Every structure is written in C-alpha cells, then in structure tokens.
Image (cartoon, rainbow, N blue to C red):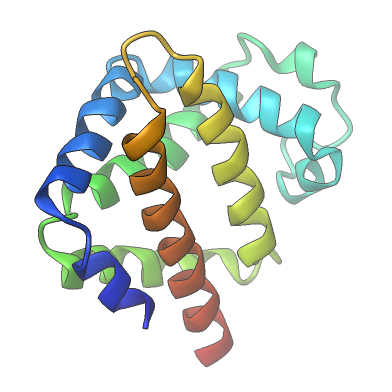
Length: 157
C-alpha cells in the first residue's frame, strides 16, 4: 500500500525532497504564509475550513499574525514529516495523527491534495528549491502516498 510507497522512496529521492524542502524551511513562516494565501486563491472553498480566515480576502491576510502562526503550525507539521522520512513508521504515525486532528474540521484527502498542489507550484518557483524533473517526481510520489495514508486513516476512524 501507500506505506510501502513511502518505504520505497530511494535515498536519492529522499535527499532530493529534503534538499528542496530546506529552501522552503529556511523561512517556514514566510513561505508557509505565502502558500496559504495562494491556497485560498487557488481553492476559495477551502478557506472556509479555516474559521479564523473565513470570509476574508486572501490578500488581506498577507502579514496577518494569525495566518503566520497557522502557517508555522501547518508547515512545521510537514517539516516534522519530512524529517522523519528515514523512519516511515514514525512518518505514518505523524500522518495518522494529523488525519485524526482534521476530522472534526471536515478536512479530507481532497483538501490535503489541493494544499499539496499549491505547495508544489510554489516550490517550483522558489529559488534554490530546484523542484523539477526527478525531484518533482519524488515529491509527487511522496505527497500522493501521504494523502492516501491520511485518507485511509480518516476512513478507519
């Protein structure tokens, strides 16, 4: 299954993901805030899952302290998952906890996939991230497996 997909990521694929992520993580709050603002533009319906930001224009949220805090939480969580790629069981545990935490908010696989899509588009234009070719393929493989693990866990609960 998808846990096996995570386990099947090669050392080179994991290194590529970690290397490109380092460019994002260098300013996780700033980059994360930019991604959330873009996410709300890309998928306006998904903004309603974020009660604090519901009804606000995405551009109004630039520089918003609550958005910055939330961005650091969202992408800090993803950072922990990426850090644990060499320990797939730990990574799956983090994914399952995240999946469980989001059930009461109605956030499902679709929203994760949409956020991941915005994230990848952002990272492809992020200087130093070099998300293209094999690196993009590695990200796609990992993020798809992660979204599927989240989906399976939410259906199990």
